[in-house]
Image 1 (cartoon, rainbow, N blue to C red):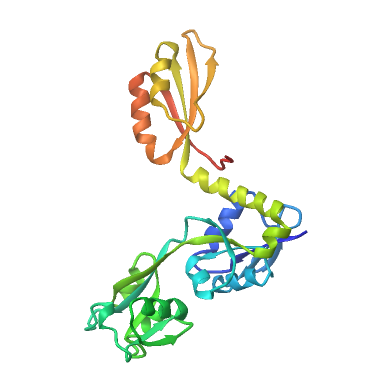
Image 2: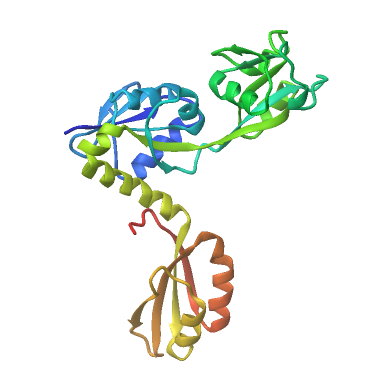
Amino acid sequence: MEIKIVLPNKGRLSKPSLNLLLKAGIIPFFEKTNQLYIQTIIPDVSVVFIRASDIPRFVEAGAADLGITGYDFIVESQAKVVELLDLEFGKAKLVLAKPEKSKIRSVGEINPKTRIATKFPVITKNFLLKNRKKAKILRISGACEIMPSLGVADLIVDVTSTGATLKTHKLEVVEEVMDSSARLIANKNSLNTKRKKIEELTLAIKSVLYAKRKKLIMMNVPEKNLQKVLKVIPSMAGPTLAKVESPTPMWEVYSVVDENETYKIITAVKNAGARDILILPIEKIVP
């Protein structure tokens, strides 16, 4: 049975989504740069490219088995899909923003005549309900940022990553609405009928995510210092040792460690007597 994976065809999630599949070994056979439906090197696995906002509904309808899109689009679509993984990229915030000169300073100052332009009317409506507020929600498909300057809206609800676009258009954040990041989602029926293959693909993707936070540390340790080094070096299941053929009794020690701990670990093992220390990247880790 064929597995279709749908990816964003453009935007902030497009390149990272494709790169993730490539690192996971799910490699499309590109023949033309504008191909929208492509077979991969894995038999019966293909990739489809469409708009990120359409992906949740596409997966819900069963037109694809798996999809990568933003959490904001999943919530906005209200699609009944299964979220398998937070892919930890495309991190952004959906915010309520106002012109710098606006007198509106908080959500509490919104009134029924306030006009809010957004590409996320469902999320905006729920945000207002949560805050017991009413406003005129203007659904748009273009750039929200220019709507206040055109006199179309008083506020906007839109996605921001760095805040640079808001600043360029002289807008400032009133309140954060929700956090978003890329997610791997699945069709409910596909999880039942194609579970084995979906689990294999999910594991391949998960192995890349896990490896991102890990480094391989290798070192030579004189035998007289071995026990000191072993006491200070962390590992997943235990460090690996190999006898080194050298005039001085020596062991090669290597271990997988958390990336944010490498500085501390290097200092500790060096002080314990290790030498020739190497830090290497890891492509995948399969637990």
